[in-house]
Structures are given as C-alpha cells and as structure tokens.
Image 1 (cartoon, rainbow, N blue to C red):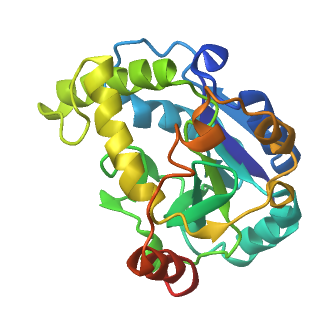
Image 2 (cartoon, rainbow, N blue to C red; image 1 turned 180 degrees about the vertical axis):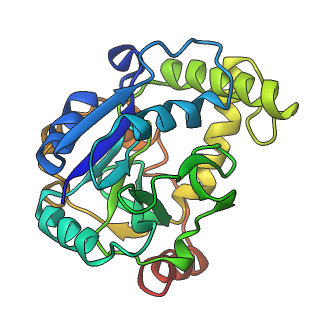
Length: 266
C-alpha cells in the first residue's frame, strides 16, 4: 500500500506558512508528495481551491491520498497507526481524523473530524468539490461526511495562522473575502474587501473560538517538525499570544464543557 499527500503552496515565505516543517512531515509519512497552486493568483476564484486539490489528486499514483493544508501536521508517533488504519479500511472511500485547532502552542480545540484521506485505488471517481470551501470529498455528487466513515483517534494538528503577523493576516483575509464575494455574492462573516475590516471579522471569530480551546498542550507534545518553530515565536506573530488573547480571554464552565465534550464524547 502506498500513500500520497497533496497540498497547495503559493509564496509560503511571504505568507509565513510553516512550509519547510510541513513538507518534512509529509515526506516522512508518504511515499509521494504532490504540490499544486504555485501559480495561484492574488485575485483568485473561490472554486480554484478545490480545483488545485483535484489536480493534485489526479496526479497521484498511490492507493490512498491525504489532503493537507500547509498548516496541517501529523505526529510522527502516529505514522504506523495511520498506515495500519488505512490498510484496515480499504472498503471505505474516505476515513477521517480529529482536527486539533491550535492558535497558541499551549492549548487546542477539537474543531471537527476531517475527511481528508481518500481511497483512490477503489474509489478513483472521488472529487474534491464539496462543502463551503468547495474542496471536501464527494462521490457521485454526494459529499462524504465524517459521521458515516471510520475515524482514527490520531489527531491532525492545525496551526492556524500561527506564524503570521497582523499585517499578513489582514491582507490574506481580505484576499479570501474578495474571492468569496466574487463566487457567492456576499461577504458572509468575512467582513469585507479591505484588510482592516477583514481582519476585524476574523479576530472576532478567533475570540469566540479561542474560548473553547480548553485542552492543554506542552511544547514537547507537538510534532517534532514544528517544536523549534513554536519555541521561537515572537510577540508580533499570532501564535505567541493570539495578539493578547492568551492572558486575557475569559472562559467559563460552558466553554470547558463544550471543549471537553468535543474531544471525549463526539
């Protein structure tokens, strides 16, 4: 059994993506790593997100294909478990993993279970065109949802904007807001086309989500590929203190209940 990982990458140094760390992780886990999106324009069309992942899927030559955003990591201690899990579930088109959403290195929320491993050998007609971001897996026009398929209790670590400055996040969020508007004809919860309003909408979302980050982590708990990077964050980077939220956020019993339930009961 062979595994491919697909990801997209555009100007990773400028966007402060943890690309070197991520690719080292992917190369250790997979037999093949396919990168698309290198020519992604600044003013892109929203459907291009799924199209780039679909391009990567079609270029792979392995039995299983794992879709990874460039801030996604698996822990090296789980590699053997992941490979065995894929072998054991070859009758299913997809399998899923719990997603640890991390804003600061000391805590996380189990955001969702993510169907990001696709059984290409037996289900080659999977398309990555579903969901709000138009890159979730579908088969015969139906989105494949995690609740219907096996989940391995080995997490996918997501380091959401953790290396980025306010300026980088502002420009990036505005870019994505404009793309969303061109496709859906509204800004939804994305603020607007300008960096300041896009950042403010994003940060209000972060405030609400960070309240549910009740599960604790130590630096040594993270994948080895990104430990040094996390240890050297400076105060201008979001991951240092979530722009001041780390020491000022108010959590109550409801946030703790929901946060623990997401991890242990869902």
